Image (cartoon, rainbow, N blue to C red; front, side, top):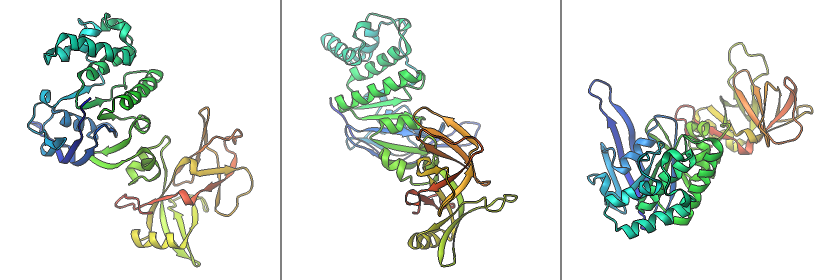
Length: 379
């Protein structure tokens, strides 16, 4: 299958309604998708990810910048001539056509010989496990089967680029998991260039070879899933990626008694001794004080905080459990510092009771510090 690399340079999209304020849906987007790569665009609703997909497909016209396939500029090329296939959240199957006819429709429009159409459709249907359904109509299919047909219609086209816009969001959880695995297998088998849009960060982490995190039309970080999780570029990525997300504590780094100390901001009315305090390594403290002028946001992933039911020791913090969430293989324990609520992830068999006071250990070797003004990660 002939695939393509995709490159976006300084791409922007501004919607200008007749009687309203301009909407900057995409801002100065730069992205290179390698040939045969599966890349996922993720972010909250309205972040610009679907608009980006539509710009690549030619369904929207870029206000600024260039979009290229294999080095050839596509800005003035019509959607039907870009050789892309899109799969939408809505299956968009023709109800009066059989599965075979739905999958063959795009090929018929392109005047592909009927023998080749039959071969492509049957091969694709076999690959997706829907060969026995070719003579059925969409009304006789389940949601998962309809989504397979929509995916098969795109695959049979054998385009240079696949664009998938939240194709699984209408399916129930078991079917969504099954189809996610199916898409990953198809990508490995076909070596296809795929751009996949989702608002579900768990879906993004399991599917993408690289992930593009977007917010308010701006790319926040492009990275492999492991890097995105363990080395978030800024506060938005830290708070968006991960379930539960990273615990974030606002505070200051000060130098007292020959030591560098992180002290959590203590809100008015908080009881004495309720805020978090940690002794930092000298090099770390000096760097933070220099880069942020003392004010910082300290981040810990929930699994980087552990607990035990003994007495508090050095660099541990005693806290009472406020809430317990039992999630099968793991448990989430909720705590409060008066200034911030935070979550501890544990998979131990023994768990504390609500209101029980436990000693918490924060793994400072895994901590990430952010500048509260720029919101960028600094250490």
